[in-house]
Image (cartoon, rainbow, N blue to C red; front, top):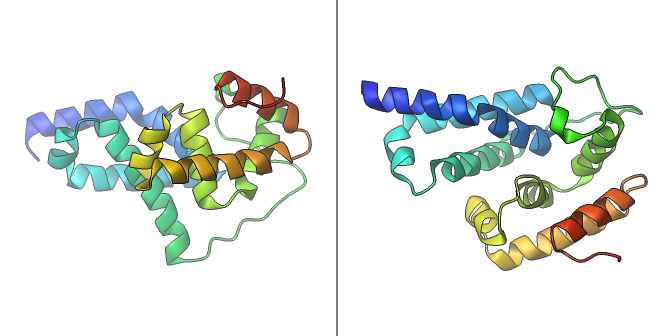
Length: 179
């Protein structure tokens, strides 16, 4: 790769690493899988950085690669996840995510969602992307994003200990809920 493109890629990674890992963590529910997933997506982006850099939004391009790599992980082999009574200790801490107990309940609830619903909920409400942007990242229609988000939020609302927070977050996002 040419030096200018190499520098541009390195700058992109430095600026976006933590956000991409955070998104991957929400998709996978595991810090180690999240870092592996992010590295895999960035390795693919590096190989085609000339094309990625020319995209209107390189971050959205790489985010789509991240979601696709996560889906591929389930296609290639069945990933077994063991559910425990308490969330495992986390190697890193995101101070903006809130209290540890709430995060554990949210991550358990997200882990229970099917992969497509989880991706839609994470991208739409955690990453705060519009329905059109989520549809572009996932390669589906905005109607699919709406239906998957609706189904995912309904499942999250049914989770004990999560219902009040989900109702508040969807009201804040302009999605309705109880008033």
